[in-house]
Length: 108
Image (cartoon, rainbow, N blue to C red; front, side):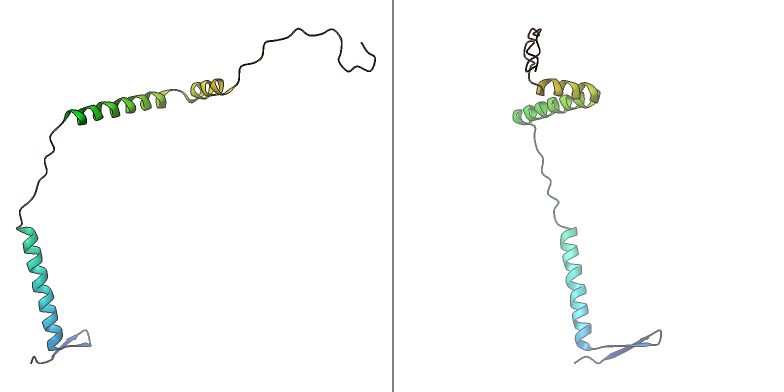
């Protein structure tokens, strides 16, 4: 079949058999064919046309983005204060204080 080839590089000896050369050339040729097939294949381009649903979606998302920007631009103290006011239950109406002291040991 093929004869063995001996290559010496920097004092190291490499022996290439006929099978090694056959497999290397097969890999190189198949890689080249695959690359050429990809390089010269038709380029496919997808074109999306605008639709009314896409326009509506863009409008809604832009509204959400504007609202988030407004919230982000407000000072943090105001937003924390308003959140605390919303979470606190309303205070009961004030009652008149009694003149006596409850549970007093003198009974006053």
